Image (tube, rainbow, N blue to C red; front, side):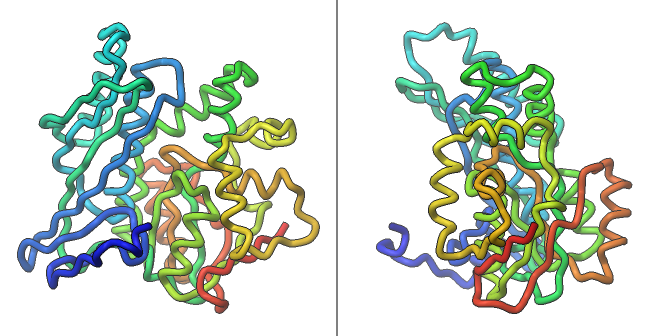
Length: 320
């Protein structure tokens, strides 16, 4: 659909829509650029306050993926006019509290009447031109580092149907509420080639975008990909959101699956995430420095899950 629209060009537009990156970057002057993004969605949890915190963390993630500092946010709200307003207050309070943790100022927003509640933020950040980390700079030989485990789509879907252990659900909520601020700071201190955050298109979907934009291929090992507790068992029971199944279908032309991999493995690696971690391409000689920085910034889950390879741009090989 976007290909049918006019292409936006401007000498100061440093990152636009060409590679499906996480946010736009616009240069204001030689030492200052704006970073802009927007994200909102329906509730994925029953608790309105935690829905607000997760939605805010998710919207902020795009800013962190670019290596920017969040500055201003605008609420985006769709809410049924006949639902109790106290639920909306709790949603907004969750968003404000998570924004405050990130140092983000929420300065307004817009609300409409809708049949289903939806909440999110338009976020503006700042960075120095040339220091943005895009999804299009990965190089052959780079290692792929993932900073959070995956499985939130499968687990929250099970939660909606009361088919998940409370402890498993609690682990997913905690992961989604965790800001990617520390991981972003770690990669900036290290110097990396590319980054994207793992959200709706799933781990392999976002990796495909990075590889395609960078003109390279990628290799991922299932055994190295961290999963949230309970994810594999739920996938074996056939539980997955519709978005995950759409992701898997869309990946058919781009993924070379090892014959030994099960259908559950394919579903898990395609799982549509909310407020997932950062996926970073880093030179092998900088890996240890990156991991040390992750530890120093209290990011405990960062692991190497694969590497960038010479291949048809966007093609991913998945190994056991």
